[in-house]
Length: 75
Image (cartoon, rainbow, N blue to C red):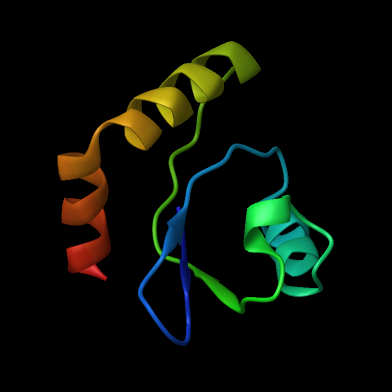
């Protein structure tokens, strides 16, 4: 999960096999359309053995607002 560094505390949830590269792309404005124009920091991640499991967890976190808020408040 990413959180923007400035402005309204917005979060972004996604999956990747290279966290550092993905974060750099987001901060350069080359990531997902939603992330462009913001500076992001990594606040939470989990490791999975398969893309399928990672995507399933991504979907769960995206749809569970209470969980997202809890993670955001910890950071």
